[in-house]
Image (cartoon, rainbow, N blue to C red; front, side, top):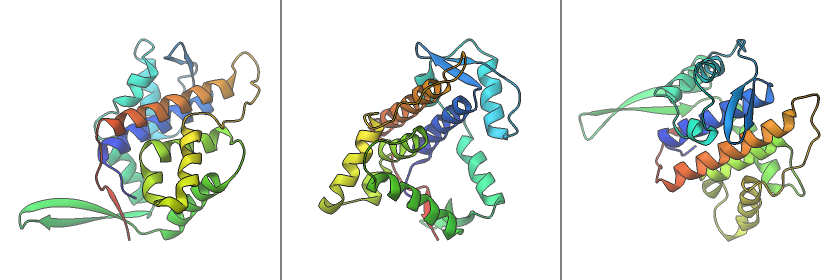
Length: 211
């Protein structure tokens, strides 16, 4: 996967927002994030994000996603490494610069992720909120352009672009006082918008390499 640390951080922050909204922990009203339930979720990174949100006045959702905390990438990379999905390799560039390259060693997980994105890009009609977030972030981060290059894949890139713009997201009825799908839809829009803004800002480069 080709993506920069900065872009990865913004995308991860957006994914956290979507997860918290899907779990009914937050809502987004008038562009601000409101915490509905600050109880621990059992996920270390999600809990840290939720605790931070609960400790401040409702922040602007787009600004919150666009400014991920320092170390967010390292935290998720450590989780993937502990699970045996990726592996760190220390290398030297130009004889003295030490750099860390991350190799994907669980090719099954990589294939599953690609298969899921292929199904979204090659599908027809509307998509659910989960697919909207997945496909939308793939377009917003520039990953779709690298996975589906050339004229032959133009239709796939166009579909992911439309998904990112929210034009193909199916409407789902809410439940109770909290319209959960509305909160998730808002979170998906914010996450994709933040990633697109980061991309326009010029973030780019290599971060993960296939094994």
